[in-house]
Image (cartoon, rainbow, N blue to C red; front, side, top):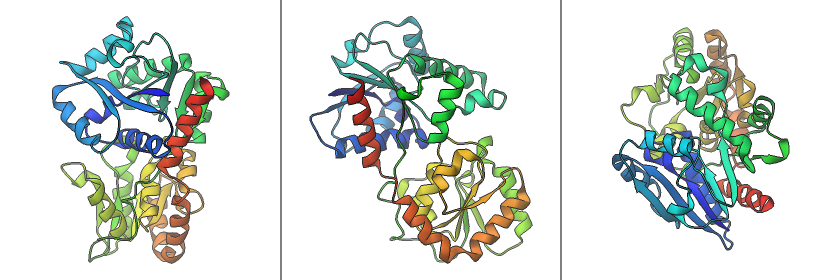
Length: 337
């Protein structure tokens, strides 16, 4: 198969979406076979460097176009439906696009990924442009032969809210990068760690209130305290150095940081929202994200049960590999051809 894969989110600082794209590409390459992967997309001049850096070491063909006003270009392309993607990437068997654009195509399987439907559930919390973009692309998913999601929770949400037939929805769980392991440098002093940021879904405010209730000597570090995103190496060091990792999110598509922290040998305290059930398994302390008191109690419990939770988390995290993510992608494309 020749697979044209939209990589435009990699032109911005990486979040979970970008990490998933890289993981899926690596996983497809690990599975081998007679396949060609073509990374494509219109991006800004500044963003192209980030994208090229992210793709370093991946054996994929690159069909990247630098354009001014990249966001507007991507949206207009989807709106006017011209020119077709084949003009830029050549013939392909599969076109897989992200939620950043909906490129037209002349032939081949049409596929996309929905990481979550948060913007449709909570439009009042987000910028109207963000809501419009995700709403448009969620509707476009109805025209796809294959719609990937990263959890059974999101699969059910997509089927129920968008009315997409279940047989076109495929669950491709995320994986854990090799860097996230208990082995490696940590820190000399113990601390509590969270990847919570100012994004309302990450629930930093209630975490901070919970920490005040704890009244313990362990310091709290969160990603909101760092001016730039942490590299995977630095993030892994914080995971493995932490005594407890806290993820009090209100809503997720899956919750990749949970399995990364578990794979790094850290006891985890995780929101009880059902969108995090699959990431947590039976290896985390679950807490009410609405209640600072519940979060604080969960941290105390994790501190007391750390020797039990760490091995449970390591075993749970081993279930998630990017190789398996890639296998599901390739099998799903093949089934649709």
